[in-house]
Image (cartoon, rainbow, N blue to C red; front, top):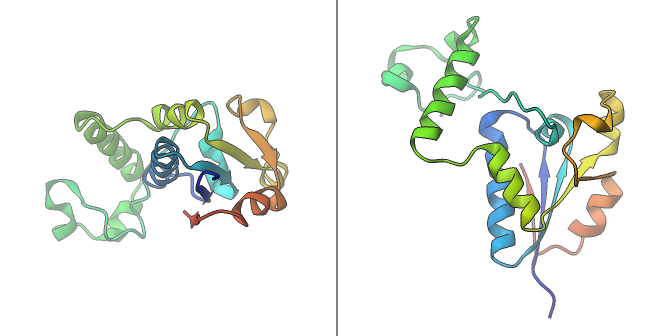
Length: 159
């Protein structure tokens, strides 16, 4: 009997959207699933050696705000200069205080547990990325690479 399979497409490269593919991927691998994550468009940045991730407060009215700001601070206010950096710093500090693993740690857990990470070659070409900016141990492939695995997966997620 073969292992269950989980296929994930990661399309977003912000701090808040970086957690789901790595948490779900590492958890599924720990449960014995074969896991592949296909990183495309902005999600491709999650495979870079040097990460500088920020939260996406603008357009995310469900984001809990510190000091009850969600009650008195309009969502549009998060577009003010410096707000994204400040909110990213606050989120990172809160995660550290709560013992939440960093993206780098989760990404390493995925690698160590055998999660196959595929960088979308079309996106690499589109944004003129050099392969040297990405972490070692990943593969490069196109949509057909993803579908060859996802077509036989038990679970497929678009994140």
